[in-house]
Image 1: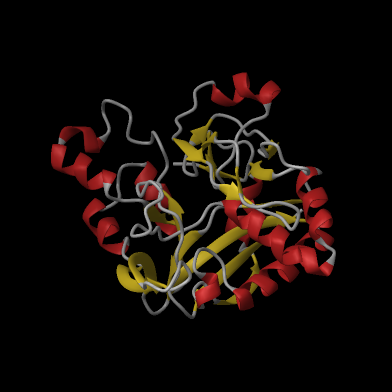
Image 2: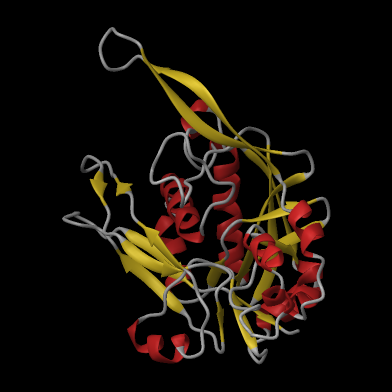
Amino acid sequence: MRHAICKLCFNTAVRFGSDAGGGSLTSAGMTFRADMLFSALFKALLPQGQADALLSAVQCGALAFSDAMPWKGERLFLPRPVGIFSKPDAPSSEDPSQRKLLKKIAFIPSDDLSDFMAGQADLQELHGLNRFGSAFEETRVNLRDGDQPLPYRVGGFRFDEHCGLYLAVSGDGDALTLFTRGMTALSAGGIGGKASSGWGKFSLSIEPASAEWARALADEDAGRQMLLSTALPVTDELPDALDGACYTVVRRGGFTASEQINPMKKQTVYLLGAGSTFRRRFRGGMMDVGIGMPHPVWRYARAMFMGVRA
């Protein structure tokens, strides 16, 4: 299994769904999840006749990828590990202001992770580093529903210079080639909402992971395993996976469409969020979330882990 880092440098504004937005057009997140990426890749590879090959690669374990996470300059950021400061003697539990500050820190530079887990990180500095761009709103006009123009507000996010998103990717040679092909197609067409309006376009670079990253992605013996993708254990994995786990739960729903039918609502599912930590790894799987669809509608719920050591 080879490991790579796929960096996205956005040339335009982006629009990704926000967990806090409740589906509002004016709310927008900064990142996207692995299940959204799989759906976008599948759609991008359909015209090339490679969509089923992508599904097969994921199902057999030949390909896995993380949620999108931010980068700034030369630094890669990781989700804040869940449960790291849950011990009574943790420094953050002594000062309410520190606890509040901790909740505002969504991402940790990968090179500061060990200090953070040891309780030696400067939380004020980490909070300052958690700026990668700015959210905004703009007014648009809907001219499709009759002659009367209908203005509406839509939210987006614009990355600062020298900031963007990246993905950790693991796979064999053929699967990584397929992943690269799909990402290249997405870079031109855009990813996320409002791609048809020119948003979400990016330039792409994929490089082998550093030796340190490769070791962490392969480290199954570390005391804590941090989830890098939004995922869910399959039924027979659940008891072992949740034993001693500290995790967040993410609601995933939405709509799907194909050439055969109009948009239809997907089955709502609850997955474990990136940053959740576990004693041991699980594999996860693919979920068919179609309701009354003439074909499967796949939700990516495969797990990618990083072994973390204090």
